[in-house]
Image (cartoon, rainbow, N blue to C red; front, side):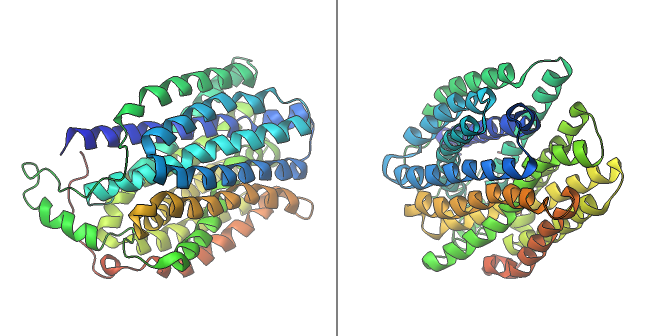
Length: 412
């Protein structure tokens, strides 16, 4: 394997961890922000929409720029902006200040998110086999890191500002230090190292032709269908991000330190699932991963909604995270591979609509709390997961219909 490609893969992991940590640093401090600003669940849900709108705008700007200027320019720029903007929600004292802070942070996060995913598509294409879920696994690692930092800070009696400022500063340094390892433009596909895998040449060619991520070009119509599925599954993910801690705190009466681990449990399950998903995609196809994952997520969130015990809530959030873990990477990968020359633009469409769902989801849950209890509002997520499972055939490709047992090694 070319050293530059391996370095690019490692750097991509780093940026995914960075993005997950910075977003997680805000997510785990949502209960503190709600209390500091003095807003209701419903008002907070409306404010969180602005984070999604900012992310959508950032993605539409950064996606085409990544195709034009290359990931080596856009990805580190997004990382620096996101690290600098993290402190803003922590400093907000009024609803209007929080609204502006979320809009700015969302824009910066969107720039980083879509550009690093576009770069991940190019790395996956160069490897000739599924690696996208592994990148998204490290995003979830970032969420776990943020949850641990926040729980430690809460138990030490610290306000959110010091931990958010420290994580943002470290993020800026990491974004700049990792830039040189990125691929400047989309690479041509390369074969795996023949010394480590004698059959890698034929496998790489097969993967490039019929990748489980859906490399066949299906036009913009198929990309927008993928975007609608992304909206549904990321709406579910967003609800877990923003309401899991509040669910344990308000519905089950858990203390703040324990409640923070609800999101940590979800993020840890996402990490485990994504570490396994690339192998599952290579063997069973992206459609099977999407369908069965969405069904598992439906079971998990239903357990959260109806279970009266804390252990049931933790088990439900774990199942929800495990089920959702393999869904988003396949949708992003399919969009990017639809036309590698426009990977940034296509990923920005799918990710952009998905992020609208991610932040509209918490708002919808917040509005539903006017009518039903918070946990019962999660039944909406059950319905969305079931719908996604039914519609998973959108990802059908040649590799989905013929499961592969000659799995290439994924340890490089």
